Amino acid sequence: PRAACRRPRRLVDGFAIINAAYDKLPEDVHVVDLSGRKYEGFEEKDLGYFTNLKLLDLGDNMLSGIAELSRLQSLTELRVPANSISRLAIPAGSFSAMKVLDVSFNNMKSDSLIA
Image (cartoon, rainbow, N blue to C red; front, side):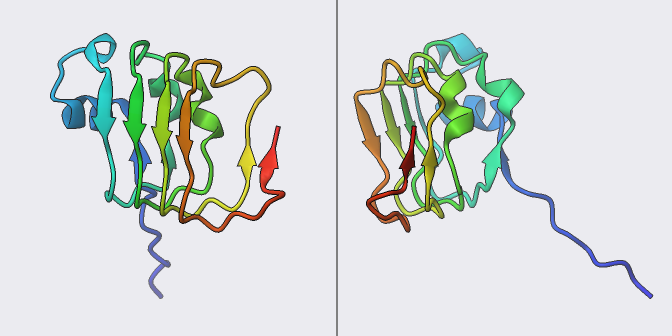
């Protein structure tokens, strides 16, 4: 009998961010578009290197949350429309620079924000 094959989860990692931004170093990345790439989660340990990332577009993926992105302290705009987000668990004190958060076209209700 063959063992069930599980496909690996597609994760947003440092290499994906660098490649999409066409930069060589994490600190040089300011804007990145990772929309429509079927990402399901994050390689959290890589995110802290992107100290100057201001705008991140993760629209049209399969993400269920964004709490891991709280490591991106410089983030001012986060776009995550059309994902699989039903609840937002935001760690206290995170996303302090955030000005724009787009969570449109997700499966969220009025009580979906957990702070």
